[in-house]
Image 1 (cartoon, helix red, strand yellow):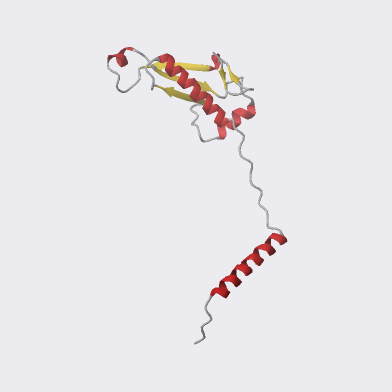
Image 2 (cartoon, one colour):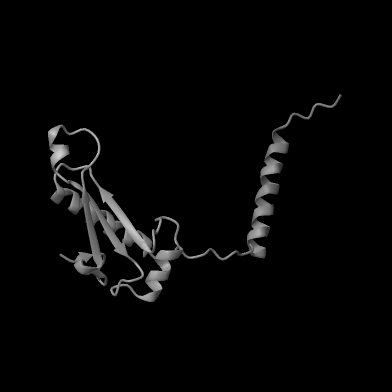
Amino acid sequence: MDLRINAKLKIPENEMKWRFSRSSGVGGQNINKIESRVEVIFDVFKSKALTPFQKHQISIQSQVKLINGSICITAQNQRTQYQNRKVALSRLASTLRELLKAPPKQRKATIPTRTSQKKRIESKKKRGEIKRTRQSMVDY
């Protein structure tokens, strides 16, 4: 089952490695018998689905910690291995989507125009004049 990240990117199943183990926490006897904890490992640098630019984009971001060039996602909240596999795949897809998002455009610093500066000064003077007329003119 291939993992679809977006309309253009699809990760083949053979590029993901799975590891299973017994999950921790409460669960009674079931927890001692069944390996329901799932770990999906996706090696970013060995992937043929990603372009070199995408690999670089993932590697420079600090949102996800790359371990030996791999993204490792763990799921153990559900009771069955199948459900945990689905959760792990959806987490991997959302993580990759976030990492491959285009960075926001940098704001270009601008200076106010002469007209806007004039308008600002005029409105300040007008407001100051209004406040001055409200004051009582008591002369001691």
